[in-house]
Image 1: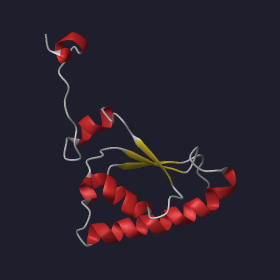
Image 2: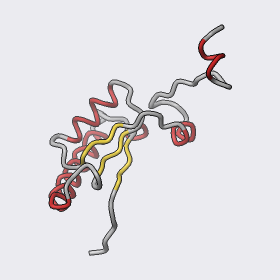
Image 3: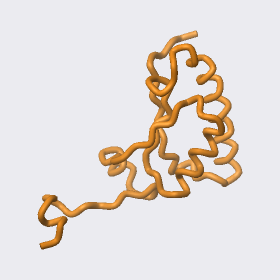
Length: 109
């Protein structure tokens, strides 16, 4: 008996960045958490997309220290601008950016 038949009610579906967005939203699977203050974050995202990662969280919460939040926010803004440039140049597919932002609180400044 195939292992899938023994352990799963339904056969597995493999998810890629090109999969239906609703399917991805309900089936994130393993998710890569990256601190928002990671140097060269835009390169990290592009590299992970190239190896097929379908779910990443850019974290401004647990992955960085409380005393690093402002610097991480600044770095994140710069990296998001770089990602936008990469999309505009055609180096990244803006329809398949597999990342989410995790924030601890939202303040109106």
